[in-house]
Image 1: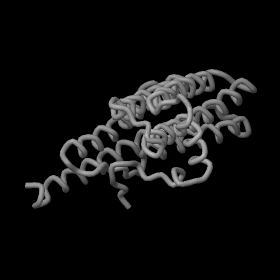
Image 2: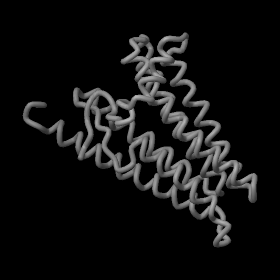
Image 3: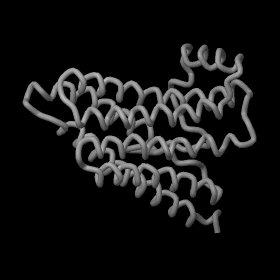
Image 4: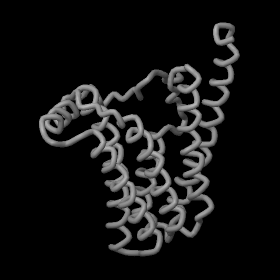
Length: 216
């Protein structure tokens, strides 16, 4: 089902632990913009860890893969809490819309380009990054034309992070079949193809909405 609206629907937003952490942040000198900026730091660390993992072996590779997965999830947590502190915590700022979107685009590029270079497939990494950015562009284009935001998949942001996180975890087991970077390459390919399909799907939905009688 297509998920639409002005705010990304997240089940984790309604959990107790998320609410408790958001309230803790909101009660302190932590701004939503700072949290959004932190997501870029997490993404840079994830991309760097993926790069090092692709170039290493043994214990070093395992540590780098674990760190890459951890920082990908930390990026998502930043994306969760910046909105919660801004909306539920009442700390929204005038330039919030910029920091809500810009760091996400930077984060996707850092993670996927880093992963691509690490496994020796920079073109694939940049393709995944480009299509990831394109999915967000189509969503924002929809909003700019008066339509609700389209957060549909199959490779929305949370799906992209889940895919590369799972790839990092499975890649730890590659020595069992004398493999190296195949799982990461497959995961990155899934992201690239899935993001391309997502951009196409969102674009098709937007065109249909623009052609609706009440839009003319």
